[in-house]
Image (cartoon, rainbow, N blue to C red):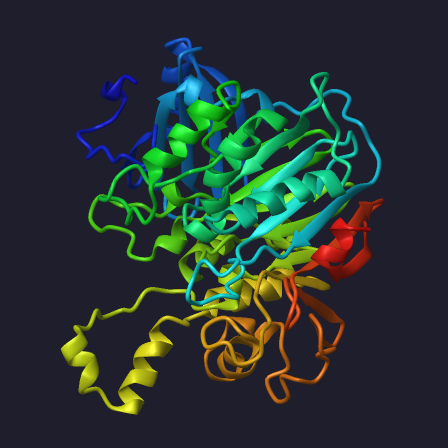
Length: 458
């Protein structure tokens, strides 16, 4: 990249393969001049779209990809670049003729299989079956073989199409962020099932180094699994504002972590490195939040019009848990002498959800998808803690749960009703669940809500 286009600005390692600079106060005229210079240097424009508060444009010269993301609210311009072999561009082009017809989306409960002390911590796995029979996968679950097996069972039980060699076709595998309950299963899936699937694209956007955000994962191991077991899969670094097309589905990236990085301060809360997506398919819209926190929600509200954020279904972020880092780190000694009231106030720091509440209100879904373990009494992720206590005391799930009577509308299995809003958790009190919907003609229809075991054996 020709940095002479810009001033002397610090360069950030914004993703595994990408670098970024941030230029404040870039006027529309200056932005247009930069675009003109890129085109003069033989960079072809592959994508350009101006949203309510964000203009995203993506260019390539056949070897290098350059993305421009300009905030119309602040004039801030973020410029990223990487080699094109690490950021495929083909899915940015809407296919002239994509198969039409019913698609499905499934929330699949994937547990920890006893591998972790906070079992039944639920990982996250969603499977979209496109009209042409191929699959889109979102995340996968915990770093254990049981979760890897669940992913393969999901492909089998959904009747995903196969290639000429009998391998299941995965059009795109999206990883919202690099925590173990989202990418961990992939590390076990790749060596066990890599030769039984054909993965076309892998979409992820992990922090490039510890200067932009904590590196809370074994990134080299993840990359090695791709190189060893999926050598033909193309990588994509999703950019906020971009649209990626897979069959009859479009994935709209609403926020990517490079919208949040700054040279001055490291992003403190790793969950805010989540990419957030809107699945737009057959006239329906499903919002996937990963584990993105209140800061991510604020950026989404800033960049996109309410009509873009309006959704039929919403995945509740971070399994319904907290949404921020502690404002003030404390040593064990300091914690030991804090009063009960001081500890409660400190805990509240992690549950700030003003922007998330606004986002949920703007999305106004009729269906909530809650990747949460529902075991009553489980101290971290169970229904007593999350649904009853945190909904009253702190927050984000209050949109989905009746604050005055959290048990009202609870069916004793995995459904919570609040007015016209119906939310499905990813397990009952004793078993993992699957909730599957048909998407067609602008309508979301419940197909099944049953135990995962019975679905696989059905």
